[in-house]
Each structure stands twice: as structure tokens, then as C-alpha cells.
Amino acid sequence: MEAIQQILEQIRSFLEVPLVKIGPSQLTLWNFLYLLILVVLLFYFSGKLRTWLTEQLLVKAHMETGARQATGSIIRYVLIAIGLIIILQTAGIDFTALNVLAGAVGIGVGFGLQNIVNNFLSGLIILFERPIKVGDRIEVGDVQGDVVRISGRSTEVVTNDNISIIVPNSKFITENVVNWSHTDRKVRFRIPVDVAYGSDVKLVERLLLLVAAENKDVLEQPAPGVRLMKFGDSGLHFELRAWSTSLIHRSGLLTSNLNFGIYQAFSEHGIEIPYPRRDIHVFLPEPEGRDVDLSDEQQR
Image 1 (cartoon, rainbow, N blue to C red):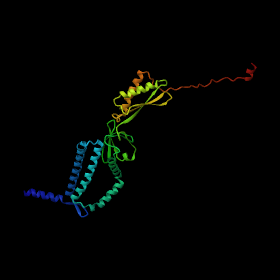
Image 2 (cartoon, one colour; image 1 turned 180 degrees about the vertical axis):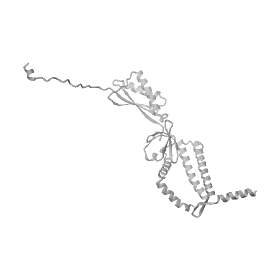
Image 3 (cartoon, rainbow, N blue to C red; image 1 turned 60 degrees about the horizontal axis):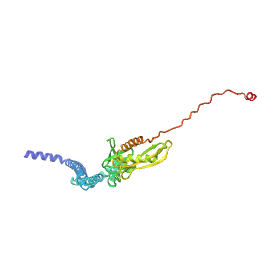
Image 4 (cartoon, one colour; image 1 turned 45 degrees about the vertical axis):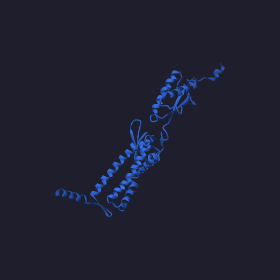
């Protein structure tokens, strides 16, 4: 037992060796280990709490996915801030001695960390104002896809090619953002269709509405519509307008399915889809003529 006590005393004396002095406080190796262990545990358990809130507790409150993610993230940030203050106090660190360190950190933020702070504050604005939320279909710059995660610094967007793109949060604050599902998930698609002059326009309208009605991804309400937009050079320009909620993330597929149906319906009813027609005028150079003596011609 005495040997064990001696070993423990040696370990204790080793851990209590002062390493850094901050004001009246001295930080030992034990203080650093204490801070490291508690900070790791704080981030770990706050992450677990956020997962439990978003996937279990708030689900029972019938909150949508975006609201659950925002609430869970805000609660986690608050717990981390409070936890760090408590950990520093229990470690015996005098906050008044950290003023110089805070000033140095402020200078670092002003120069090298301004983008990180900008993205973090933008992330808080996104979580509070919720211009975008998890599950939304968005476009920002050249990025188009579904929002799957909003973190403190960035937002993860997954494209139709199943490629994850990490977008800094500041882009959602400073740039124009197209949110296809901000208020609801109903989106109207416009399908341009050209038919030849002389076609039965009423038949064209009925066929377009029939194709839309037979597509399972087109909503009955709001009802599809057909518009004769203008008289073109080669034909009549129609536009089929159809609403959908199921394929807003795959607009190309809905457009393709409707175009297939339109082409088949037009083929069965003899509706001609025009192609550009151009009149070509060929100008040939006149053959070189012989000089004519007008006096001789007049004499004849």
C-alpha cells in the first residue's frame, strides 16, 4: 500500500507542476488535462443531446425537419457557451487575466479569422431567420440541390448527381438565393411546345391538358393550363403550365416525361411539330458581255 501511495504522490506532484502563469493563476499540467477532457466531453454530449432532440423529442411535437435542426443547433451552441464558462471557472482560471488574451484573439479575428466569424454569424442568422432549412431545394450561385445539414460554418447541399457541396453560410446572406420550397413545395413548370401553322389549336390545347392529366407527378389542383404565347416564324408557340410537388428536385425528369407524352399524342392525332424553314436566295454573277457598238445597232 505504501508503494502505491508513493506512486500516486509522485503522479500528483508531477501533474501539479506549474506550466503557465496567467495573472495570479498558475496553470498546471493537471489544469490542461482537466480542460481538455471536459471540453471534449462537452462537445460530445452536446452533440448527442442535439441528435436526441432533433430525432426523438421534437419529432413527437410534430415539428418539421428544418425547425428541429435549427432548434437543436441553437440549444447546442448555448450549452457549449455556458459549459465553457463553467469549465474555465472550475479550472481556477481568473477571467480578468484573460483580457489580454481576448484582445489578442480580437486582433486575430480582425485579420485572419474574419471569414470564419462571418460564416459563423451567418449560420446563426440562418438558424434564427430560417431563409433556408434542411430539406429545402435551393439554388445559390452555380450550386443547385437539397439542403441536408446546416452547421455553424457551412451548409451541406447534395446535388442530383449525389455530390455533396459544402457552401459557406455567408453566401446565403450576401447572395441571391432561390428557394424552391420556402413557403410550400408546389412549383409550376413551364413546357414550351411549337406546332405548325394550320393546326387545330383547340385540339392542341386538349391534348396538352390530357398529357398533363395522365402524368402522376402533375397536381390536379392547381390545375394545369395551356397558353398560346405568340406567333413565331415557323409555327405557333404554346406553353403547358403544370404544378408538381414530387419532382421539384428533378425538374428535368418531369419535363422529359411530359415531352414524351406530348410527342406521342401529337403523332397519333397528326399534329405537326414545325422545324425552322428558311428561303435561300442564290445570287449568281452576270456573265461578262461583249462591248456593243450602239451606232451599229441604231443603223440596223
